[in-house]
Amino acid sequence: MNHISLVHNLQSDPGEFSFDLAAVAVARDGERYSLHSKNLNEQMVRVLQTIGYDVGFTRGSGQYLWDRKGDRYLDLLSGWGVFALGRNHPDIRRALISVIEADLPNLVQMDVSVLAGVLAEKLLRYTPWLDKAFFCNSGAEAVEAAMKFARASTGRPGLVFCDHAFHGLTYGALSMNGDDTFREGFGPLLPGIAEIPFNDLAALDTALRGRDVAAFFVEPIQGKGANMPDPDYLRGAADLCRKYGTLFVADEIQTGLGRTGKFLAVEHWGVEPDMVLLAKALSGGHVPIGAVLLRQKTFERVFNRMDRAVVHGSTFSKNDLAMAAGVATLDVIENERLVENAARQGDRIMTAFRDMLERYELVKDVRGKGLMIGIEFGAPRSLKLRTAWTLLEKVNSGLFCQMITIPLFKDHKVLSQVAGHGNHTVKLLPTLNLGDEDVAWIERAFDAVIADAHRVPGAVWSLGKTLADHALKARASA
Image (cartoon, rainbow, N blue to C red; front, side, top):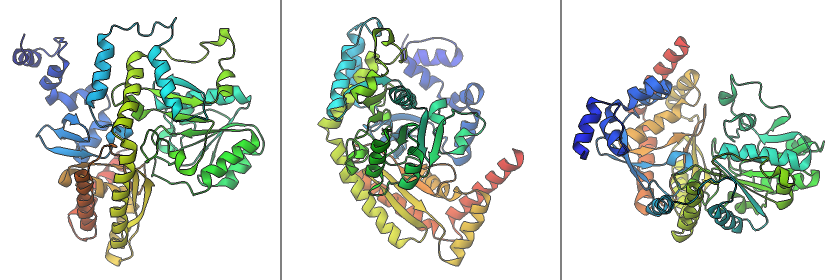
């Protein structure tokens, strides 16, 4: 059956099975949103349709996406950092195909994986103060594993995290989530876990001095808002952990693998954590994977006897495709000098945004490292703008940022995100292979949209009124 006839048959008989799943996707693309509304998350479809993001992306390559009309978009979201190398990188694809075609004895379980050993060896070269690697399937699983390692190795029950943190959505990770939007309705969460303010060493000292805390979990740069640590915060936190016998755990799931212009974000502050958590970009954008890098003495308190060789793990961890994706990812990062590119292009974007900070009263702060950047908006000084801002904030705090991201998307074909619920920061998390033309695209688009936001009345504020009306209707029907 050729491709054309297959598409025809699939349209007339959607139940027909075919190994040509690309043809299935083409044939049923018109049902994209109805399929999801019926069988998956209808609320997500409603969100996309409300804000006009229902363009139906059909292709992705590198830092670009194409919609069903053939329009090209610059992706500054990169799947929340998964596509650090860009979408469908040919080297990652070749690595995965080579593994599939090799008929390797995958997941024998009563054996060990050569590729897992190779990936662990390569990762640990970047963290010479750490000795062991543990692989799992996601960032949240890496957090869960680190919680278990910490409690088992110290014999202590307590765990500490920072406000505004995001460590995942499984129960243990959710118990260390600083956003009540994600926690609401899912309690009770795990006991023995305390939240302290980010950038507050005195609060950390108070939390640890009882010597009952197994580990302190922290994102070197917080993903929800691109919140930066004070210059002495991470080093001071590491010193306090050492003083009180608490393990220092760096959640580098979003910041790691070159995102901030260093292989690990903690390198900016000269800190050597007891555990480093990785995921997202390590997948190469294809096969989910998570990793915990840790000291041998911590590792061996869990895997300390032969009868405990499988005391923690998961069925699909260390599968050959995930391991191959990880090995290939590290090779691409090195060969294409993506860490250096992230630092260079990030500096260019930050310079442009800081110029906007000087020129536009709605821009309140610019922060970040490498290609993890936040541009924060706030109440303006001028009366007309301040009045419009205040009215919008009364309806829904943080709504203004959608007045930035929606025109970026519709008018400039730039996909970006608000950094969190009720947040006034637009976060950039693009691929690490951004070129000079891409950076110029970002500068033009943001400058144009922010300039428009300073015109009251204007198209941006008309959009704001529409968004406010939707928010009020949603609140009334809740």
